[in-house]
View 1 (tube, one colour):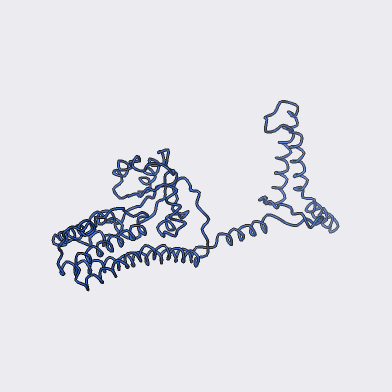
View 2 (cartoon, helix red, strand yellow):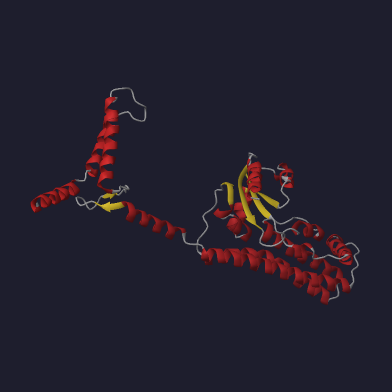
Amino acid sequence: MKSTIIQLIQQVAKIPVIKAIYWLPLIRGEEKNLFVIITETGTPLQQIDLNDIFKQHPLCIYRIYEEAYALQQLREGNIFFLQCFQDAYLQFGALNRPSISVDFEEISTTVKAFYKKEYTKALDFQAGAHFYNEKRNYPQAAFMLHQAIELAFRTAELLTMGKEKICHHIANHQTYIQFFVPELGQLFKTESEIKELNLLDAAYREVRYDRDYKISPTSIELFQHKLSKAITIVEEEFNLRYSAYKGAAETAPDKKINLHRKLQQLIDLKLKGTPFNSNQLAYKAEFRIDGIADIMYNIMGILKVCIVALDHADAPYHRLIPQPHLNVQTALEHILQLLPIDEMETLEDLIKESQNKK
């Protein structure tokens, strides 16, 4: 499966206008791999046909957006893009992403405001439908219910697919969202419900343009039930994604803290103060040497390299070694540090002590 995914990514990445590819699992819906593909701004999306590529990978689906649109939605607080644009999901390319606050409370306010702005529109039409139903103006009630259900779908599409479908046919919205929210994709499911749905879709055209439109109270009751169900599903979808994002934000380590910790560990491991100047640091390096004999063999090896180098020091060298004498000098300075002087002095003391005991 992994090799198949890599092959797919490579195929898509060959298209010149592709700026980034994200691979993430669907939070709900069918068990498929979701690829979010970002194109250069100004690229007509209808000119990019990825269907032939994805037909070869039936367990994969994709969504495609222009960079400017995706980044605008990210800034406005669309939780779909906040979840999508995580470094762990990036498979190819990169985006000039705006700086996103690490303060979850600040992000939370933006995300909720984006959701409520869209969601409230559906609730307003629901209230309007209730008003006209009480007045027994069933055509107007049907028009309001149509608008409310359409807006509920469009809100769900923004949250789960990143982009709403600009269309006034509820049946088309059901097809559009089927992979991502199956419950909405089957909101009107049975044959009788489909017939009622056709009446509901007709309300948008007929009532809006003052044409003769008839609808029964029974149909209105069905539409109210379907709207309530749709609104509940949208709420659940938002809460599910909000909780998932909140959990990731709360458990993810602060990158700045991690970076500071790693830097401090590196300083402790590799740098030490010099005894001569406290404002300077010396870099520590470790060599694995097994005993005094190993020290001597290392010294001998470096000396041999220096002898060979000096033998050819006047010959034309590679451009990366313009002054071999300096390199030899540096190597010899390292040898001085390797010389086991303290150890040899201790060995001499032991030899003298041994001779005195004889």
